[in-house]
Amino acid sequence: MTAVTDTPAWIAEITMAELEKDPYPFYERLRREAPVAFVPALGLHIASTRAACQEIGSQSDIWDGVISPAGGRTFGHPAVLNVNGPEHDELRGMVDPALQPSEVDRYVDRLVRPIAKRYVEAFENDGHADLVAQFCEPVSVRALGDLMGLQSVSSDKLREWFHKLNVSFTNAAVDENGEFANPDGFIPGDEARAEIRAVLDPLLDKWTVEPDDSALSHWLHDGMPEGQTRDREKIYPTVFVFLLGAMQEPGHAMASTIAGLWTRPDQFERVVDDPKLIRRAITESLRWTSPIWSAVARVNKVDTTVAGTFLPAGSVVMLSYGSANHDANAYDAPSDYDLDRAPVPHMAFGAGKHGCAGIYFASEVCRIGLEELFETIPNLERDETKEIDFWGWGFRGPIELHANWEV
Image (tube, rainbow, N blue to C red; front, side):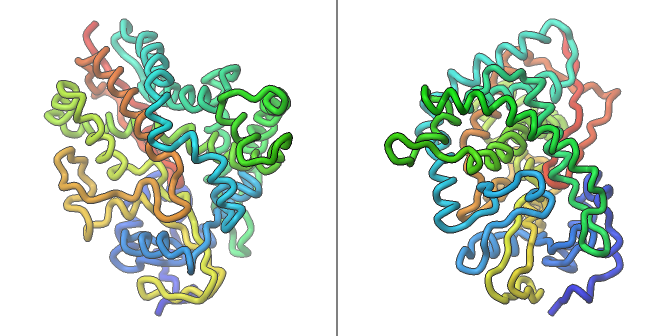
């Protein structure tokens, strides 16, 4: 059995900066030597193997959904990520209907395709672009923003909000007393939340008396007694969750798919030539660089043991899906992007009751975006003069993605 006091020096010495820059070497060693381990820099345990993440994620009788301390500080309570039982059921009942596959199929093409066309047309004659800033992120935020009813908010402002919330959410380092090591790291998130509320309050006032088909209008009204609306203080924490994770993750997945395919030029050409392969390319990308890399946690209701580590009741364990998706016990050559990989389900969207609600929506945004990009610019090539740097421990994706093409 492993206890907190037995933390090896190589785990005790890891820093948040190292995890944000390149978590893979550290997690590879965790999977090999300490599949469930207490990490002092975070003040919580990490589950790093696919088996450990699956075990914890699937045992709702033992494990409750909970958010990391930094996530709780960023989103507030009650967010859909950190409630359980009837409260969780109510919030999932609020957000899930618009994200069910049959409902997504009803609207997603007419929602996303014009957005993707508009953004790619803006630079197709330039012969170069940073695809993260000019395509992947804008398409991602605009698609979800319009679904939520935020057409009046610019794509640049939506991107600014999720970047600021991400700074706050990933400000997870703690000191030796378990206190946040950098309290000022939450200032950007606090600024974003204040701006979001200032913009949304008038819209929520309007939807209260004039409901429409926007997601946020449904959040106010659905499941409520006649003549009543849901308290917006119950809505806002989940709004912040969506404006961070759901806003950026389809964009990260699109960018990572392109980056992965660029490591295999023959596979890139096949996907461009045959759009039916785009879904498979996205699926491999979600495994290869999981957009939600290490952002979901659980807390045990009773004493339990996972992967040889005893966890007293109340232990917070971060499920590192990005690490689970690189587990060599489940995937051959997991660090390689491979379109032709044998189909083993990935864990990019989590597991159990707290699995991501937007799995299908996010995948369809990626598919439609990449269809439009590859059809409009089939001769897209990586700009070999620019590095592709990935960043992030909670959420991960390319910072920039520079491409060239003949006009």
